[in-house]
Every structure is written in C-alpha cells, then in structure tokens.
Image 1 (tube, rainbow, N blue to C red):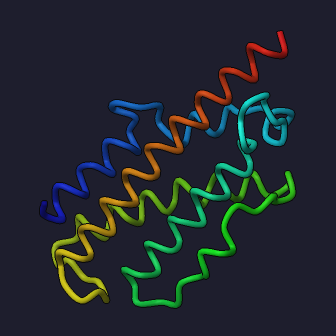
Image 2: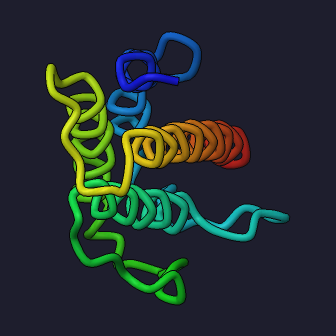
Length: 146
C-alpha cells in the first residue's frame, strides 16, 4: 500500500464515507453519557476515547521520531472535563495522519516508507474500530435512558 492510499483511507474516515463522521458523532454525545458504564461493557465512552487518542499519539510520535509513551499507561479514567479536548484531539490527529500520508513528499522518521505506511494503516484501522464502538455505546446509552 502506498502513502496516497492511506491518505485516502483517512479522508474517508474523517468524511464518514462508510462509518459515522467522527467529528459530528463525537460532538453530539451528551455529557451525561461520557462516564456512564453500560452493563457488559468494559469501559465508558470517555475511557474508550482516551484510549484511542493515546494510541493515535503513539503512532504519530513514531512517525515523527518522538518519544513514545509506555503501553502500560493505557486505559486511564480521565476526568469528564477532558472530553471536549479529547474529542478535538482525536479529530485533529486523524487530519494530521491524513496530511502526513498525503504530502507531496512522504516525510517520516521511521526506518522505511513501508514501516511508516504500516503504522498509519494500523492507526486508521484502530481509529475506525473505536469510532464504531463509541457510536454503538452512544446509541445504547440513548436507548437505555428513554
């Protein structure tokens, strides 16, 4: 897979071509739902989003040659006041990845273009997975409170 194809993948995720567009879907989540734990679900929307942003930053930091946080720091329970900033960071990181992959010159600090593309593909798959989870949790929470 080439960087331009990965850029197109991120464009489709951002635009909501095949899944809910992250910016709009996240913006319409009520504050009362972000910390509510559904029966049978291992985490809240807020914890899920925090985890997704945590991994976005790991992958983007690898691409940029920056220090990467320890995997042992994953799955935190942030304060609900962090939700708006996490929501913005998630969407901004998607856009950042799209721009990296779609740049005229594919620039990264990894050992090869192939490794960088694989890292961005991992990010796109992981982000899509969590967008779907969060959307499902949002819908279930709305239904459970009616």
